[in-house]
Length: 129
Image 1 (cartoon, rainbow, N blue to C red):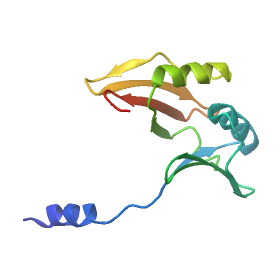
Image 2 (image 1 turned 45 degrees about the vertical axis):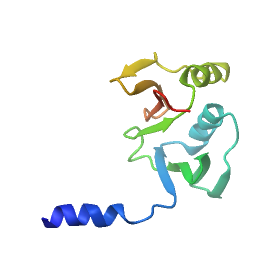
Image 3 (image 1 turned 180 degrees about the vertical axis):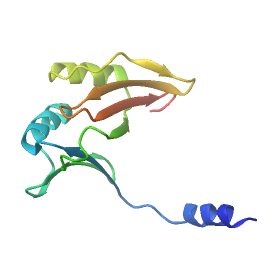
Image 4 (image 1 turned 45 degrees about the horizontal axis):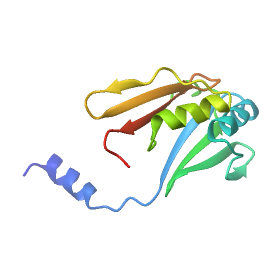
């Protein structure tokens, strides 16, 4: 087996414990308000003056961080059980997702864009609970 395959196999054996995905913002105050509407609640953790964090799934966190130089260049995808219901809930909170569209034969997605231009995609995998 070549070295690349061995490295991939070894990496697959490592247990991943927690995911932290970051979204850079030019104005943390503005971004925090927008993400509060997106998630329907205040941040779960405010570790310092430059970042806020939301738990989005078991052992998965989305944190918004003050970083004007990188803002507007991020794509984050989060899976939900019922995309239609979730998009309706977003609409009720004043956030309008783009149209729901098919993703191959495996699922569907809808996108929202935060105030900095970061893309947040919501997906539903066909057959997922």
